[in-house]
Structure formats: structure tokens, C-alpha cells
Image (tube, rainbow, N blue to C red; front, top):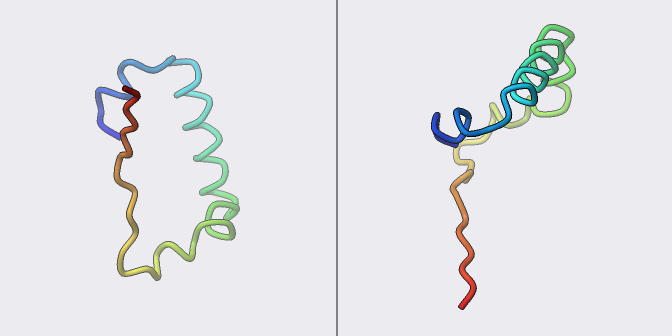
Length: 53
């Protein structure tokens, strides 16, 4: 996700999401749910574009 994606997004939703992320990081909830990602050597999070003809 590029910075432009965030700039074009609803800022209230961005703020709420970042607040939730901060709480999850502080409480350890994020680590319990996603901590395994730190162990991966490769993780593909690339964009996928679908086109309709």
C-alpha cells in the first residue's frame, strides 16, 4: 500500500485503525495473532489487479 492510498482514504477510518493497532501492539494481541510473520523468510503482499473486458 502506498502513501497515496492512505492520503486518498477516509482519514477518520485511518485514525481509528491506527489507534486499534497501537492498542493491539501495546497489549500483545497483535503478536499473538500475527507474530508468526516475523519468522517467515518470504511473505508476498503484492498488489493484485483484476481487469474486466
